[in-house]
Image 1 (cartoon, rainbow, N blue to C red):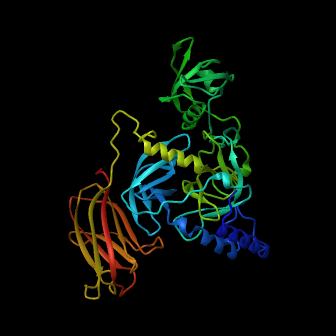
Image 2: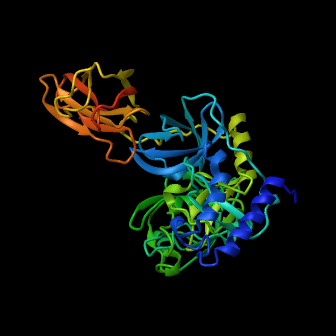
Image 3: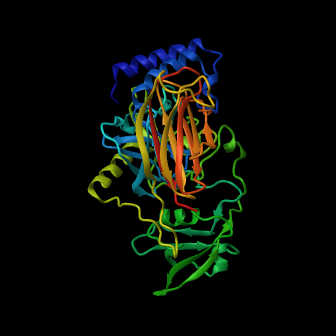
Length: 466
């Protein structure tokens, strides 16, 4: 194994701090960061500073969904696939929010590649998991100066058969079959348990399943994923080949008879919906990562990414897709082998709505501007935009110079909505549907009187008219 001077210094310093901080709780065992020794946190702040600039916060429909790692300077990001639903945006460390598009995905590894309109981003640096040893320190990174969580390596290469099943709760989907490793012509059922959903539907031992829930089946993992994508009570079609004849059955998905699994696994943090069934070994560590913080990089003490967090699997287990696997998929993506995601065809399904930029501009508040009628000690500027009745709009006001206060009025000056950056940062956002066609007044002002400075205002149509 290679040794690196900076990492060795941090390891020695960290070990010394832990000896001094004898009252600090054990790391990676469900303890919050604020309960960990400040000396240890300080060391990890230095570790995460650089990789945090290569990490993004991913939101879906304006809600935190995942983290992501910048993998190429031209706006390409890798993240957790199954968490991506609705309108996707990526927030960089500097606060910039960019619309994102899914270019490709790998369902087995639960990874996706996104594209944002940006250049000169800072890609994450990688290190092979072959250089890791059990109990080495790791940190989970977000787009901030502090680590999301810290812990140690558990198992460097956890094989598929040792991973937890995807769902461990009482409502886990259940079919009731045992199968072989599969192949191009489907997956052979080596056992169908009595009185199970599979048996009740008519499936039998030696059937070769070639399609399940309209998905082509070629491997055990593909059938497992197809089943795990359902919920108990769902009715789906399954196509097996029996005696060289293709049959069709309707199976009603059951609930796992195993109950809720180990209740201690739910202690420490919420668990991910998908917690296993990955097609190759994963990196297991004890960093306590929330499901919405999966998808981003887990790093060593040199700030190098050794994997992408993919699942919070148990009380002391988080899984990461190893860096070698991520980079293999990256090569597949660049070569075109990993295909662009195509939406599933559904009769009369509406096309997904893509955000439309209605207005974007820069401005500056100065002490020569008029005082605001609501914030009487604050200066203000007015921007007039035309909006469509029933359409959803997202209005963002960003400034590094003042505490933003944003307001929407109709053409007659009647206040409709406001935002005073109550989320805790200096920016403001309003999401609303225009009640009628026509002009609207966007008021840019400040939460504190007398403030001035530059700002950026954007108005985007983020939902079709209703």
